[in-house]
Length: 355
Ligand SMILES: Cc1cc2nc3c(=O)[nH]c(=O)nc-3n(C[C@H](O)[C@H](O)[C@H](O)COP(=O)(O)OP(=O)(O)OC[C@H]3O[C@@H](n4cnc5c(N)ncnc54)[C@H](O)[C@@H]3O)c2cc1C
Image 1 (tube, rainbow, N blue to C red):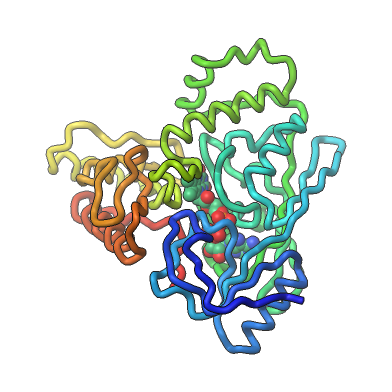
Image 2: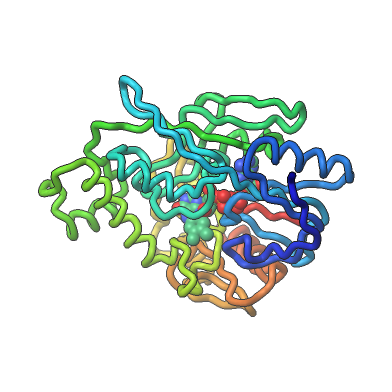
């Protein structure tokens, strides 16, 4: 029997720890529970919102006048195949538990994604990525409930339309599916490939990789390197670190056409900025770090406004230091308009606003 709780506080279900109450709340441990919840919302003629780990979610101070449906399904299957291993994980598994499981099993492909909070079901949505890896590289298939027909559907990797922090699930198909399971294809014969320069030099300076005997040990060493770097930037959830009360990066790094990038360089010169923005390789254009734009626009690490601010350890993370959603959104708008004015670029918000 699916239980529906009324007037349920939402703040502690998110990493921002912000937001009011949900009119109704339920936890779904399996597909039947999810279908029950949808039918419940339909019978009451109310909206529903799918919640994973709440690490990319901002709830309004007024809460949500509908049903919040929390994904709580569990299970990880290990399927050996001739050319690798397939891991099938339920949407409600913690993503980092899946990463640990893969590393312990000597499976490569997700080690650089260590320490990212949230649940498996959300990983395909914004094509979670860090330190030169993205889930799109290992996702084989996404299983979901089609919210129009309530039937199960499957998407092969190429059908997910992955890009930088995007997929069909946060673009044209936003809100159309509940992801119930994700299958990943991982590599058994691995020499961890470390593409991100900061991680490469950190590992080179702290670990003698060639002395490690097994693949699992090498993957574990990469994981430890990633976690150490993430901790320094408050990018792992740590109750004792106030700077981690965030959603990670608040804005996506803008990807500019060459013309727009040249225009940005002109504006930088006009604004008396001597250094040029660093750029990342991106198949889709020129990727500029949003953190650089924030700092140049005066929103440096540690900037505070009321109960919210910019993380003291990462210029791209907005943090709740005891404020409200309203304050957070006002700060985000202030940053966006300053950057539009100075650089002609509208930064896109990464976390999802639910109101
Ligand atoms: C400290 C910190 C560091 C972070 N670092 C990174 C990083 O390095 N890289 C990165 O990419 N992200 C990062 N993030 C962002 C976040 O962790 C990821 O986006 C994560 O995948 C969100 O998962 P979640 O389960 O918490 O999603 P939620 O916040 O619960 O949901 C996010 C969105 O997905 C939808 N959704 C969730 N589950 C499902 C489902 N099963 N079916 C359909 N829709 C669903 C929700 O409706 C919502 O629209 C970070 C966040 C924090 C707080």
